[in-house]
Image 1 (cartoon, rainbow, N blue to C red):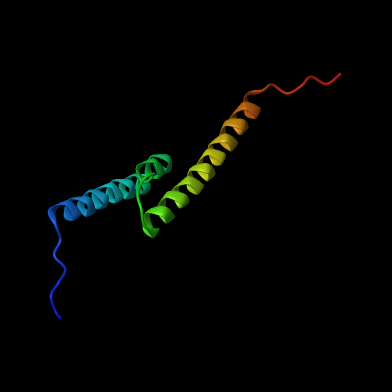
Image 2 (image 1 turned 90 degrees about the vertical axis):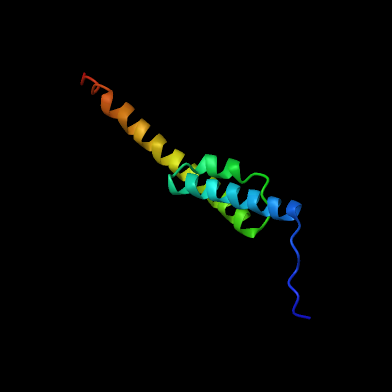
Length: 85
């Protein structure tokens, strides 16, 4: 009939813990700490957590690639031009 399912303390605690982990991961994501976000979600079930973890891993790779471009540009800019013969 119209009876709502009863949540037991153990089930409720698990859901609350998952919600807290997801919120922590979301905070890391918002701060552009993508690797931390993915790490926080490593054992989380569910499609939202899986998506955020995979997307965070992708963005972490893109962020690292951009950092490497800046590093390489700085290295090339610091070199003295080769002397002409």
